[in-house]
Every structure is written in C-alpha cells, then in structure tokens.
Image (cartoon, rainbow, N blue to C red; front, side, top):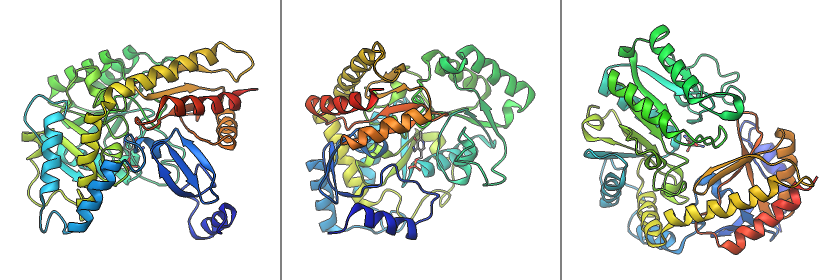
Amino acid sequence: MTTNAELYSRRIAAIPKGVVNGLQVFAARAENAEIWDIEGRRYIDFAAGIAVCNTGHRHPKVVAAVEAQLKAFSHTAFQVMPYEGYIALAERLNAIAPIAAPTKTIFFNTGAEAVENAVKIARAATGRTGIIAFSGAFHGRTLMTTALTGKVVPYKKRFGTLPAEIWRVPFPVAQYGVTVEDSLKMLDSILRTDADPDQVAAILIEPVQGEGGFHIAPPELLRAIRKVCDEHGILLIADEVQTGFARTGKMFAMQHSRVEPDLMTMAKALGGGFPISGVVGRAEIMDTVDGGGLGSTYGGAPLSCAAALAVLDVIEAEDLVARAAEIGERLRSRFTQWSQRNDLQPVTNIRGLGAMNAFDLPDAATVKTVIGKAFEGGLIQISCGVFGETLRFLPPLTISDALIDEGLDVLEGALVR
Ligand code: PMP
C-alpha cells in the first residue's frame, strides 16, 4: 500500500513549492462531509475544498447527472458544437441572479477566469479601463486578478509589474480600525486625486471577503458604492466566487443588502466539485463584446454544466439556503461559548453570514498550531485573513448536526491551551 509519507516525498520531488498543500495526507475517497486518506484515516471536512462542495462530496444527484452526461459526450467545445446543458444552465442562472433587469450568462473554468472576463466585459461596455478594488480582496492568481488582489505576500511578491489603472480602497474592518466612512472617503479621494471617474470601468467587491478574512461588506457600504457607480456610469462587479450558491444563507450574498450588481462572478460551489465558473450580468452589458472576444476551450464543459444543474436542483430540493443559516447559528453559538472560556486560546471577532463563519486567534502561529492539532483529531480546517490570524469554517451545507458537533468537539480540544 502506498503511504502518505511516500506520496509526500514524490509530491516534493515532482511538484513546485509555489503551490502549497494544507495537509500532507492524500485523499482516497470522500462522501458528503467526510474524507478518507490513502491510509484509511477518516476526516470531517470543514473546508469543502474551499467552499466548493456546498452540496457535499459526491452528492448522488450530482454523480448521477455527470454519469448520464458522460455516457452521451464529454467535450465538443461550446464554441464549435454547442449543447443544451450550457444553455439550460445559463437560463437557470439568469432566472436567479440578483439582478432585476434581463441577464445573460457565460461560462469559464475558474474563479480567476470569471473575474478576468468580468473586467473585459466592463471595459468593453464602458470604453474605460480602470478598476477600483479593495484591500484584503482576493480575486485569483492570473496576472490581472493578482493585480486586483489586495495582499502582497504571497500573491504579488516577485511577480513584477502588474496591470495598471487599479486603485484600492481600504475594506472596512473594525479590528483593523477601518470604518465604512473611511472606505467611502478613500473612494471619494481616489475619484478626485487619482482617477477621473471617466477612466473607471468598474468597482469590484466581494460581498463577504473570502481569503481576506471573512469580513462582511456592510450593506451601507454596498449601497453607497452603488450610488457612486450610478452617478459616474461605473459598473459594479460583485465577486461571488466564494459566497455564492447558498453559502451565506441566501443564494447570493448580494441579496442580504438587496444591492444589485451589474455583473457578478461565480465559480466554486456552482460545479459541486466539477470545474466551472461564470459571469452573469445585465444583458445589454454582456452583449457589448464582439463575437470571439469571449470564450474558452473548456468553458462551460458538458460534465460541469450537468453537475451544476444538479447542484441547483439539490440546493432547492434540500433547502440549503435555510440550512446554511441554521449551520451558521450552530457554529456561532459554540464559538461564543469558547470566547468566554479562559482555558482555551482566545477566540475573538466571531463573525459570519449563514454558513460562512470565522473567528480570530491571537496570531498566525496559533492558527497553525490549532489547525495541526485539529488535523490530529481528524478535522480538516483552514485559515484565512490578511495576517493569517483567522480560522474559517466552510462545511458542506449537507453536513449533519451530529457531524458538525463532532468536528467542533475536535476543534475545542485543539483550542485548549
Ligand atoms: N474570487 C474569490 C472571491 C475567491 O475566493 C477565489 C478563490 N479563492 C477566486 C476569485 C479565484 O478562484 P479560482 O481559484 O477558481 O481561480
């Protein structure tokens, strides 16, 4: 039998260190909210492949849909010979996008690709090139999305000159001493001192920052940004790559504020484990790019479209929007108990929207230690935050209460000082 140690040494020899692994054990199989490694050890999954498996690992309906598609065909390239699954998925997303006007949707493969293309569409629609983004934002690792990402180490360091005409507003985070008022003052200042509004194609924002630390964009910030956009003909792009598809207790996180974006990016949970991303937006904006200007060989691949249609069915049939809210309450009530104990590492800044939850520990080193101990106890747990000080919780929305509690018991043990 191959061991984890053997595979790890092969991984070190064969794969560059630029891509890191949270764990040094290797997946053998997974079922809903549990994963088993190649040595047969079982783990509770509080990461869901970074907010991808909202419908759990291998949901039977997703597996059945993909198997059926696989028996028919796996690839033709939508740009060569199109197929119904792509259209059906676009229709479903057009119907549920948090945009009241008529919408259109196009598919890609990764979150970064969706953001790249949202920027291209915004540029074509406005005839402007600039983008305003936020500190602590994460939008991907391609060159443009690296530039849009608001954190230097490890994302930008040593990658040289990045695309220009990107301006950055501090994201309001109470513990960093940044208020909504500060953010809006900076936005106003940028539009006076750095960029004429006529140069700005879009303002790009995550309704809840993901990698940046699970900080929630206050509704008053989103409303004020919408107003600035409307005043100056700037488009509002919501990056819902991590927040989308029931994670926050709404289908899309923008629905909490009822602020409508012009364009919205989505990926991760859409495919339920199969790679697919997309941009949905107001039809007249989406149609400003000339034929051939958008696309991708694998974008909206048949297996991924089949999976995504099943994911949308499962979210609806199992009411995962409501379940996300319940999961969030269960997690946060336990975090609150922990925050009142002095035998545990100090649990602070508890926050969350639906099943997208986090709290801070004193520093990145403590977070690392706790994640390591939780792993020894059989729990997969991940971090985030500009300083790596945050533990984030992204369990599948199909997880049982019993498994949540079992995972939290493991974590509680890991938090003991
Ligand atoms: N945007 C957001 C908000 C994300 O959380 C991520 C991934 N963590 C991305 C974009 C990039 O997605 P991908 O890794 O699929 O390129």
